[in-house]
Length: 270
Image 1 (tube, rainbow, N blue to C red):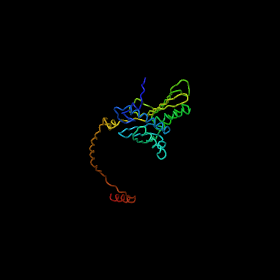
Image 2 (image 1 turned 180 degrees about the vertical axis):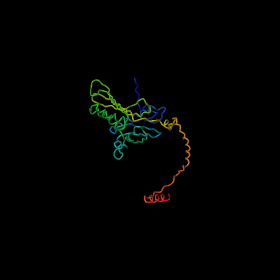
Image 3 (image 1 turned 60 degrees about the horizontal axis):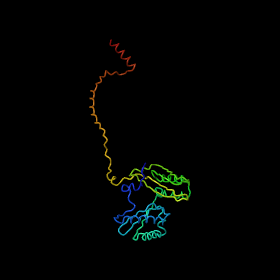
Image 4 (image 1 turned 45 degrees about the vertical axis):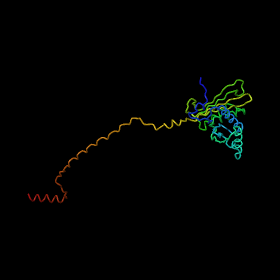
């Protein structure tokens, strides 16, 4: 049986970083509880803002909260009023200074939690679960994902017996550490119980910085083909000596009258 592990925690320190950055020795459990309450408080204040994740960075006297959202306009509000209200409520909750940063998610179709939340919202509106899951898979693949896997479990369709249905497209290598796999979990609160939605989105491979520095251009170990030496040019053949043409006596053409005159003169001489 394959043992299930959280894809983000499985890759911490390899290709992913921690969502909470602080150090504590004795008051670790108090700070951990504060982080959980802080995240829950933000999600309760902004349930419709499409918030995917919240990063917390604690310094000596300042808490920096980075909100990753697909709808930054809702978080900021008109003239920044809503974000100021959020910052004031967080300072009351933590009892110290809080700085709020807003980070926009430009492609929500490639964010696993937002995809899972979208499917869960459709299930709460009584949309057929197969239709909702297939449409979500198609939209994610069209946006450039290399693979997606969506699993829904619970009393699907209101049946008495709960079951699990899974839809997969592309490839999702969950055991590959360098694979950039985003994971999200959402719950749909329906009249006949809760339905869980899990989403895995594979976006490609990420090489750690140490590996990238060591990578160099591969050396060519192929045997070089021997270069053929040019053949020596042949010496030109000696030219033959010129041939002397021996010409015979030249004959001159004479007319018939001249021939008769020559014949008469030869007879007279005889």
